Image (cartoon, rainbow, N blue to C red; front, top):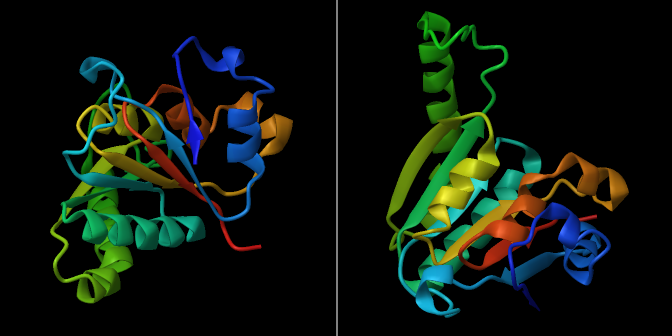
Length: 185
């Protein structure tokens, strides 16, 4: 577990222990971020939120999120974010292709969490589908969640820092603790 303070921007943490551990750790890292609206306290209410994009590491994050939600006795919000680059969205207009992608993504999310809902029957699950840019969506959720869980694809290193991955954005700017789950090596 690592503590994080401040919110002075991405480059403030460049080369820091926080980002080095988050980027290169094996297993799970929890960065304890406090609620800026609660005088630096860690929030103990609200759901556990898991963010994913359908990649294999999403499954590992889902398991961790179900476990945390069950232990805390709270709701799990599963947020699936997909890119709209290939969906046919143009100049803000929606079309049939986008509606179909949305249905496909809802089915994928339902399939990914179905087996875990059976193993954790006491955990109520809310599913949310969002289009592109996972970090802003998850940062919004961090304002009401008691924990955000995300996977890290293990890209890490300097390249990972320059690209501004979702996990790095969350560990620097979230309003609640963030659990970063790394894939098994």
